[in-house]
Length: 471
Figure 1 (cartoon, rainbow, N blue to C red):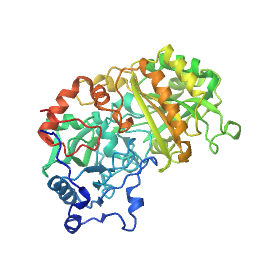
Figure 2: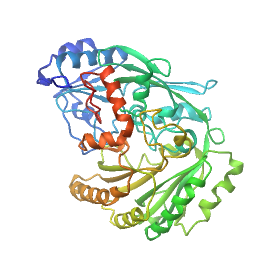
Figure 3: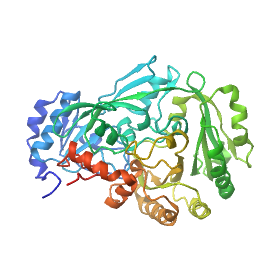
Figure 4: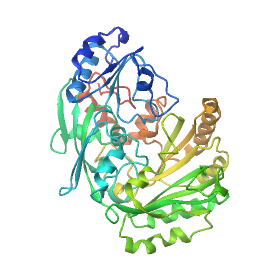
């Protein structure tokens, strides 16, 4: 017997009935705005849903979930639309679009923020940095809170305060049977465990409550890039892999292979130059910054030292303009517990072959506070220290998709033998297979299948990096 709801011809479902039950608009093929409504961040994704519900409240979400279950309709859930594989949209099915749910509430005394499921991280940063606080998130302010959180959440604050899921206090969830529950350490604890890294497999999260932390001087951090010539990649990576674990947790930096963008604030003589870079973020007392940042500023012969004080929200927005919605993206990813000599050789080879101006490779550290959480304490299992790596071919021109895709695949094939096995699920495309998903959850996978069987036994929520319910 199949573990997935039998899907009928979804376009034949009575969507007019659903439209009448919703407060928010339901957009269908042929309606004004249909094409803009189905577009997601990754321009390579071109899917045509049967209907998209821009929900106005939790009641709308419940109506959509019940409709999809009762009519055998494929169901996708969209927050910010940033998912690498475009899993916030589905052909011939129903999309629950949470983007109209954008409220935030900060409690400065309790150091918490509550955010609706359609918020972006820019919404949360705007609300929290005003109080000198932040919660760990990612690296682009336009990223949706829901997708990033449910996959784990790796960002500038991970070394000091852990992953996003390590700071999740509770979540309001619409389940596959239409029930509305609050998951926390004390309420539906198995569901809460699964939500912290298990992706969108267990329900539609309509709001999150996070712990916040005081950062920098009233929310002002010291951050920015230090850029080196591409020819210096070997010595920079050898230095970086040794230095990072020794740094205080208030300082974090991710490594990238880049082409310097052609425009301010970068000097004109660097425009279009292949380079390696480390983007630093220091969140400690500014009086100690000179001492902490001294080894960063002293190393090598950088082309640019772009470190300076700024609100944390500004650092979070620093790359938004370079990566607007609609670019074509192809992702390949892995976890790494170390940066080996063989890996460095591979980075040198493929870094010199960046196929388009926006194509890149990033290594994001996962150590410090993130390592002090047990491997089985949350669904996110990679707690050994190390990095989440991602190779991304990016370009606005679809004609360049073949060359950037081939580069990313060859790069990944050469680098993968040096990896720890699985990958950060937020960086995975939608065609990588069950083995990759299982590897990404390590020993937590079997428990995830049991939680899935409890909360979504028919696998209604399967348009994701899918965890099949245990038999």
